[in-house]
Image 1: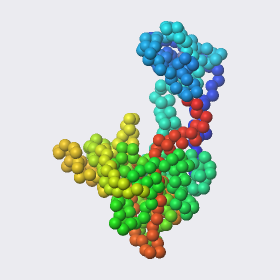
Image 2: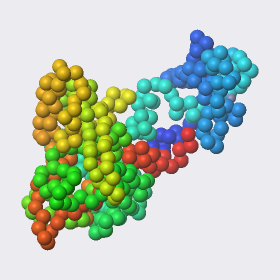
Image 3: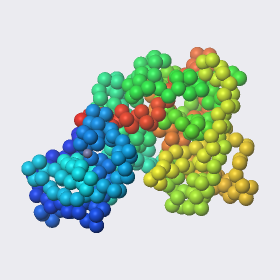
Length: 410
Ligand SMILES: [Zn+2]
């Protein structure tokens, strides 16, 4: 699976229109309708939106794709359309406004901004964010995507397919990376740039005596997401295995947290409501990073976070970083624990286990995937050694769009 959907994306983005015969008309002074001569669905746009998005050089600065301020000219709602027509030769909607301004809009530009539910959904799933494929334990085999490190570094199409897998399946494995501590950094820089945290820009995961962080112990690392105590939580975690433990342990564990959230919503709606609404205090206090400076991180958020469209956006779970200060009304606490227990039980039920080899880079969505590690044992000859780096989703989605839509102009 080394292809990328970018060709489909480009075709849809630049849909080519033959000349169309269309009638334009004003409806109720508030909308403008474009009705094709054949039986195709009419396009309907609010007049105020058209006026706001006039593309003439007085209203719009093309070079920066920026709307020029209109507020000093008065509220847009006062600018009603006086006359409209469709120019078939130019394939443009032409509007004469009551304030004597004139606007024209290319049909293709209007079609790309169609307000119909289907068109909006298509834009959200193709340009905004690819639709996620949530998966349970039994589907692990079919959702696993593997790529060669060298191909990701050298070929844009493979980079695109890798980023798409991270967005859709939530994780991917890169194989045959060199034995070099710079690999995690190079991958982050291939996408954009590293997210620096209190642990530095790249971080080493090795067992350490007197470790300040639970991740640096050889005991089992319970399922968690990194940094629930950050408002700006790291988007993906890039974990490069340089040396794997020869002991039976040291395997990665992983669960799709959004799949578990979906199961809760369907099977235990009361628990789901509690876990998406009751805020939990997540915290981290200590010293780490290059300078060993002290930090005191604290963020309050529910276990299941939704975005503005009601989609799963972020899972917060880290038993070791959950504050004993639980600043919610007393009567919520007992019910919350019941819901939380069910959540953790489902996380366990749906968890998969695999052990990376030296040269593997395991990359996953840290907003979605709970992950952990089984216990292991270092010996003087064999010390498990990983190097990690984080990248934010803003940077990944931006890169993905530039790869999928290299010709996007607006
Ligand atoms: Zn204008």
